[in-house]
Image (cartoon, rainbow, N blue to C red; front, side, top):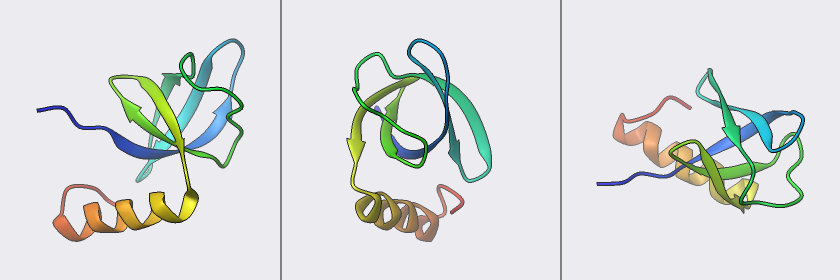
Length: 74
């Protein structure tokens, strides 16, 4: 089973690198597959790569559902 999760971009580095946050956990990821990502944007993350940008309201709803299910902190 594969899982892609919404994460918030907290830093955009040089090249295709960025740092994202999910419930206080920060991870460096690649933005090679997505254009025009800025700090504060939400992206769908899968195996270290951002796949697409996500509407902030939709990201918050999804993260709230994950928290209710007990699979992620909000």
